Length: 263
Image (cartoon, rainbow, N blue to C red; front, top):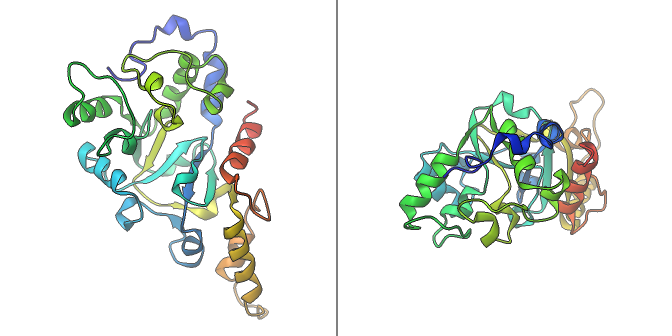
């Protein structure tokens, strides 16, 4: 049964306006381990999995679900497993893209062995998981409406999306059986790359920030009239939330996001 298909619309009415406001404004987040390459080499964008930088689980999920190579984002959340730099992109950035979305991490659901647990009847095999993931897939231009309904239906307060498990049990027990928040975080997929220059905020660990400072120090002096270096162009954008870097870069970016959308 696709997520949200068992929810009574009447039960959403009280919380839905506030949840829709959060859903409409939440930024998309990507965590990357190759920020130096993204800055220095064209096309300076978050790449799709066609570039070979995603995990085997990601490419396996794409193959099983018939998805094109994609660039991956979470709705308002950042996971340190995927790298050392977290980028946030403004709500609405998806209008420039084609793609799709899912109300959970597809790579975790379809990994071998599966990272995410759930209860499918009568069997929980690969075919059943693929059918469940396919039925739960959302068009890229409709995921925010579904996300708003999800927040209203499964959380007592919108901020709980960042702090605890959903308070309601879903039919497949995806929330009950998992402790990893990727089981209830919306995954957004672009079929095209996303320019890092479009970021509205970013944060990195200490190692990345040290490398960036060293590269900046090693740059030759700019000759008047010459275009700025690629590194200078990057630094001209939104500054790092923590100039010295922090091991808690994901938490710091999420804190910034919650402040921006007032939850």
